[in-house]
Image 1 (cartoon, protein in one colour):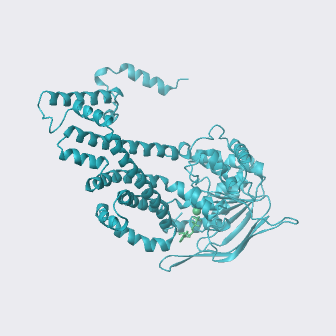
Image 2: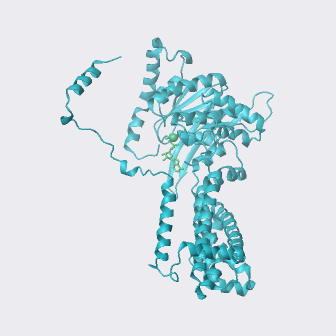
Image 3: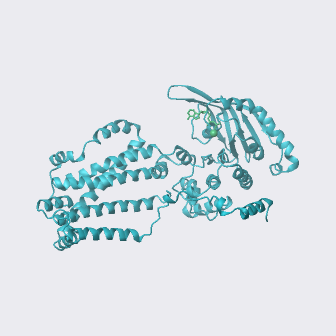
Length: 280
Length: 263
Ligand SMILES: Nc1ncnc2c1ncn2[C@@H]1O[C@H](COP(=O)(O)OP(=O)(O)O)[C@@H](O)[C@H]1O
Ligand SMILES: [Mg+2]
């Protein structure tokens, strides 16, 4: 059905010449950052190609920055003689063990701080005082206490992960929407159920933010600890090859760290998507 | 079970020891199958009263109890609360939100699923079982809240301004829906609102509260059958009830407007 308003609109449109029309344009196109998926692959491939050419033609000396081809060769030979696997395994065990110990104790103690006023009063000042100590500084102390070996390295990673997880868990618990707690209580939920069914899920996003921060820090402190004193591990490997002036092998180590970091972030992201499907 | 409130008083004391007397000498009962509305200007203590009945706010003095009927064995009364801001668990789907109260009661999975389905169907949300609250509109969320409260087959249904956060059109529709659902369940209900028209449209009895300290100013019985309250030839009568209540709270509401109080 047409109204008279529609008709008026039509005539005015017909009368209007393009010259005296102002078209409304979409103003935010520059924010619609669209690009096909293959652009990424092509981009990375071209950068590798340029890099390779730079070293092949001698613009950059192989000793300073080896090209992708020689890095790849180095990696292949390290896989073949087994040293790569040995070092990656050593690092993986330390980071996984340390991360788990740090994350789980951080979550548990964070929950405890969040629920108990007394624990919070006593524990928070202690946590705040320990937090700023660079964790590497406690390695000598740990060695003194438990001797050299794997444990000090694992524990130093754990200590690094512990604090961000602790603080985030605590603030997640403290900031749980009181309305949701009331809703659960109105249905007769007992304290323990309420913690499990409401406070924990409500704190999960904040806890995960802590886990992410911890993941980055754990890699950092792991490599440093391995450089300070370890026979095997990616950090130790990088240090050895650097003193041998074997730059391609050294680069393999650096790239491994990047891959490891990416894998951890991806893994956490995946777990987060599983556990928090309700987040936008 | 009748709900009985006897000389209930509530005083909030803040950190500096400042006292606010919010409710004074509330004597009230909600009978079987009764829809009781509480109206009053914002800040008069309606939410506080409801919270005390739900066991979420401690009383300062007085008592709130349920009277057993003859031959009824004592059990903890089940109370279903519908909150103004829906209060759904964002990490639970519609289905699991509605099941929540049943889970707390340790009812088996099969029965839980079934009862939740029935309720979801009744509030018109079939097909949305697997959605999360953030994927729903305001009106839909509130329906889920209503279904969640009804799923436990409560002895008493408490609603704290369940329609106030919605826009006018959705509010009107949901009000009609709420009445339809209520007619099916006929559950003893305590309904809190600042909206006079809402109270007159829905309630059997209306308690008018005065401003701080909140006291019962009047109790009105709405004599028009619920089904006829929307009929054209009943409108003068409906308007008369509304005017009567408005006259009772007008001066209080005006004062509330000029004072800084929490809603
Ligand atoms: N937790 C609280 N602590 C202190 N004062 C409160 C608290 N909750 C409510 N009040 C005060 O009690 C009065 C009644 O609040 P409320 O029950 O929310 O009123 P209504 O729901 O009728 O708007 C208000 O003046 C409010 O400021
Ligand atoms: Mg209120």
